[in-house]
Amino acid sequence: MASQYGIGAGYHGRRTASGERFNTYTLTAAHRTRRFGSYVTVTNTANGRSVRVRINDRGPFIKGRCIDLTRAAANAIGMGGIARVTVQ
Image: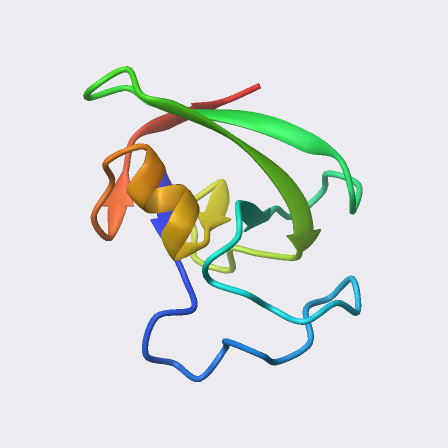
C-alpha cells in the first residue's frame, strides 16, 4: 500500500531526511530502506498507471504501507489518499 503525504500538514518547504526541502509538486517519495537519490517505479494496480520517483525521505511510518508519494506522484498514478501499488 502506498500513501500520499505532505498535504495540509505543513511539510512543504521543510527538510526531508536526506536534507533537501520537501516539495509536494515534484516526483519524489519516502521509503524506509531505499538509498536516497535512487529511483523506483510505482504502479497503481487498480488502473495500471505508473510513475518514476526519486527517494529523498524516510517513511512511511504506518504499518502496512511501503511508500509515501508526493502530491505530484500520487496524481500521476491516479491515486487519492492510499492505493495498492507495486514498487520496482
